[in-house]
Amino acid sequence: MSQSNDDQVAGGAQELPEARVEPVEVKETPMPWAQLLPLVAVRLSEPITMTLILPFIYNMVEGFGIAEAPKDISFYASMLFTSFSIGQTFTVFHWGRLSDRIGRRPVLIYGTTGILVTSLLIGFSKTFTMALLARSLAGAFTGNAMVMKTVIAEIADDTNRVRMMSFLPLTWNAGSMIGAGIGGIFAEPATQYPGVFGNSKLFTYFPYLLPCLVGSIVTIVGLFSGIFKFKETLVRPTEIIHVEAANEQPAASASGTESTPLLAQSATVRSNPAKPKSTKELLTPTVIRVMLTNASMYLAFIMCDQLYPVFAATNPRDGGLGLDPPRIGLSLAVEGLVVVYIQLYIYPRLERKYGVLYCYRQGLKCVLPYLVVMPFLSILALRVQDRAETSASSATFEYVVMWIIIMTLMTTRVTSSVLTFSSINLMIINMAPTRADLGFMNGAQQVAMSVTRVVGPIISGTLWSWSIKHSLPFPFNSHLVWMLSTVLILVGLRVSLRIPESVNVFAAGQPPVVVSSEDAEE
Image (tube, rainbow, N blue to C red; front, side):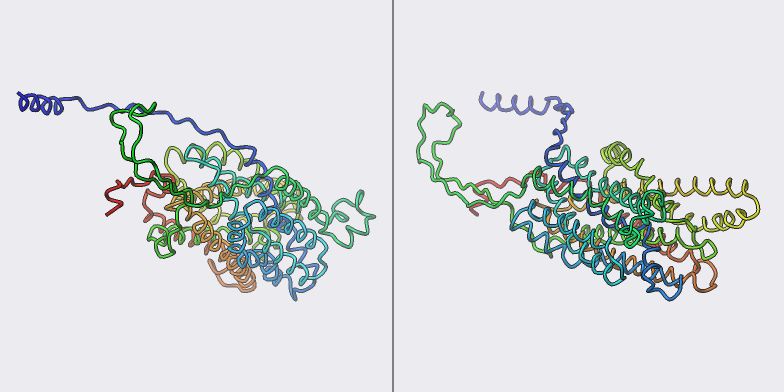
């Protein structure tokens, strides 16, 4: 009878219909604005300080009188731009380790204070050496980006991580646009606005002080936000607590049932974070591929981003656009009008539907038209320059067409920047096997980015200066740097095709494998 019942149970179990799993809608955790907004305010100071000099860097170097010929200006401009990243490269890990010891908040405050002081020093620079030193110190104090990624990983969860991480490239792009706009609008105020600043001896003697002062206002806001609004997020390891329980529990316990074990020998409560893995364990083939495509992509972006203001200021007969600082600043700032919409509205939806790897690949494809078409605009700029002397109406029409193309290409570039940088940041975080490894991942990425910031401007500045001095044909003429950036993007795209879809998932947020007590004892 017992056997028959067992057979019936077994047979019945086999005939049971497959259980239906109803989709569960996961509500997004509310954004921690009290922590996020001060972080954004602090973050803005870095891109503003870095890009502030772009619209006037050509004129600034020319005013120093260090270049023997106009075609040598791009070389010294690249040195000045690169010095920021050189200073950052040597200190970025220091700031990360320091934040693990003394906390995130003090490091962010120290860094923002240093950015404020060095930004003012750039405005007071009258020699190339002083400007170079000020820019190097500004980079040395800029370790906030690595710390901020760790902060967001500490305060975010699986439901809002993408949106919160989007604020880092968003503030970078917005800050870059703001910095470029400030630099273009307020540079050389005595010349641009003689009715207001024409009699000012201060701004006549220091023609680039005013944009630095205006940019410092944002840095001051960030500094006060960090001091008074930002709360510490570092959770320090606590001691391991060993709890001995009674051998017997009362049978009539309020929470006890028939299945409650009568023997509870001991329990160990570990409140300390997971132990970080070794470098060898972390450098998996997937991590190496992501780092390689990250370096290739970032090198291409930093080369063309550093080249653009020099290219835009260069005479069209030498392969440039012949724009003055206000118009260069305008072309850099206007794309900020679309970056907020793309970053906060378009990107989260694309990532949720297709994943970060898909978004990254599409971002690499999106930048290719910008790199290929932009150098050809010098032909149109030369026609505008030549026809301005003979036919004003024709020059005006072609000038408008040129600006429409510039704005279209700049919008394409910023769209690509949002897709690539947002996705690569998420991939780096997603690959960390535990939260204890987030620092290594973010630090490795930041070092790679800092190195490309050093190498990229030197390469682009040197090659641009060389390419416009000779008469070699395409692609060794003024198209050389743009074509090299295109090749780097294609290399990064090729490498990304070998990255698995697992980078779409936050590995450190997955539940750990449960090991039974018997297995643990063995």
